[in-house]
Length: 278
Length: 98
Image (tube, rainbow over all chains, first blue to last red; front, side):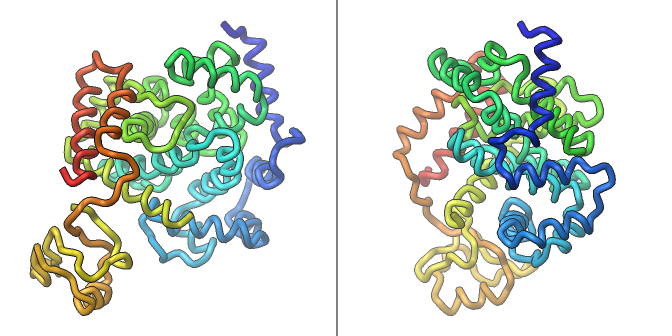
């Protein structure tokens, strides 16, 4: 069992990510920018516009099937207006950890994108006002895994191996080798990058949705999306198992069979579309 | 049946659901699409249509269902998870034309 000191030490290390030599420079730049207390829309727009490769990636993502505005967003400013600053922050982080994910856990990106699609679908079914923000919660829920692999590679290697050998979930195995889980790490980072409370909670409590106090609905949605994506077998998040959906979450969301079928179909369509784009 | 985007339509594909404009049926279920019909559909600014037939799957159905069983092995004792599994199973069978 980890004690508080170990936890604090781990948190301090995670929060010092900008100083880590092995952190990719694009992630570092975005991390530094997002920490700023009064970041404006203009600053973000300019940051992206100064990097043509990043602009292309952002536009490709916002125009993909995952966001429901296929082919209609032509500039980053337009994207910010339509989707909001939080969604763009989230996309920038997502894009900058893509390489890390591909390199260190093949299938994690696909799992994350599918969660983004499922989360957005459920948010729309529940007539939420900002389904794209909920989608970003889905996209980034496992970002802690990418950062833990970067900062604590040997511990995570062991956790992955244990999960595989003992047929248990990675979430369980992590606890043996690390003072905190990938969900905790994701929460710390989301706070560092000044994400709003709903995103912080959805990332931090996606395995234990009953702990969410400020955003129980978004957290519930990410929790259930994670299970649905695992149920469908899309991508790989460290173990192949379908995690139990917390009964209270199942009750809260009250998804009908048809709604679930719709979610599965949308996941399917987005993965086949993504396959064609890459 | 499967839903495909309009830019992937090919002559010979058969509509699995009627193509509607409002409540008016433009093309009925079972219509075999020709190049002409495909251009009309493109003009309509529809994003996708349902066509007959299953998409090609990377692995055989038996393997897909065996993998489904493996994925759910830790939640067999939970009724709501088994209810979910049933829906996913039917969804997978649907992908194979079932």
